[in-house]
Amino acid sequence: MRVMVFGTYDTRSHPRVGILAEGLRRHGVEVAECNRPLGIDTAGRVAILRRPWRLPLLALRILRCWAFLARRARAMPAPDAILVGYLGHFDVLVARLLFRRTTIVLDHLIFAADTARDRGETGGVKQALLRGLDRAALRCADVIVVDTEEHRALVPPAYRERAVVALVGAPDEWFEAARPVVSPVVRPGDDSAVGARTRPLRVVFFGVFTPLQGAPVIGAALPLLAGVPVEVTMVGHGQELDRTRALAAGNTQVNWLEWVPPEELPKLVADHDVCLGVFGTGPKALRVVPNKVFQGAAANCAIVTSDTGPQRRALGDAAMYVPPGDAAALADALRTLANSTQKVTYLRSAMGSLARDAFTADQVVRPLLDRLRTPKSQREIS
Image (cartoon, one colour):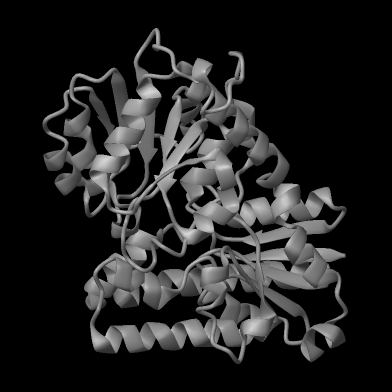
């Protein structure tokens, strides 16, 4: 099987399609890339929605990328399938024009309307346009890859049978950065699982501070940990950063980093004991398992995140959960871990084992690979 990965994706900032491509390679698929990164991330695209006068500049940039992709695609061997990378709502339209009879796979990790709504764009006209964009993109795809069953349920009924659920997973560099778990593994609940730590608990959060991530919940939890041996690193910037910093002002044991190069982030996270997930309460927050959870797991960190259906299914008993939006519960969870080296060790070991078993590229790609190996006539019947 020959697969062409196509589009304006950027695996440095959005590694998902790179994980799928690597997984296909490990299963013997011949993978070639036809890629010209657009250089505008999700936040940038949402910002353009707020400034419609910038749309012509975006259109010009997209057209230049598409012209390059069309020339390159014609010069490459004919593929059996096209995999359109993340944020490919427009790219999939071009892929369908260029490859009318080829199986098109759309990595539909986000819905445009859903993401814009989560980031504050609720205008009726914009939402209608974005819903139309989502439908047009899905209509062009023969196979739609989503990351949770909850996201699959958002696919319109007419296209839902085309959807396949594949976990996001983590790139290899996160597994390579992992620190070994060297202390004895003790299950939580054993009397020996409670013991004082010899150094502060190191906790990390990284993200773009959108409502989905619930960073203000972390900010509100931090003053409750003043005086507790917990050191926190907060990485990133975005729309809720200022609010988060204001809420966290009562705790001086917080290191704020606005930017860490992608190639340095795995090691930075792996140097911590705990990686925080998401804590938002909006509909989108309840439907996702975020990148940072898979990446933190691959780095052998204990994971503390919100108690939602998709995260429970993906992480099982290997994670520590708190109710979405509950800052006091988050503070209690981190206080418990700060007082138990053995419990942290157990959670790190359990999460690292789960990541190596289920979150590697060759594992997360299996549902997509099974679908691609199904004859197209059978996929259409189903």
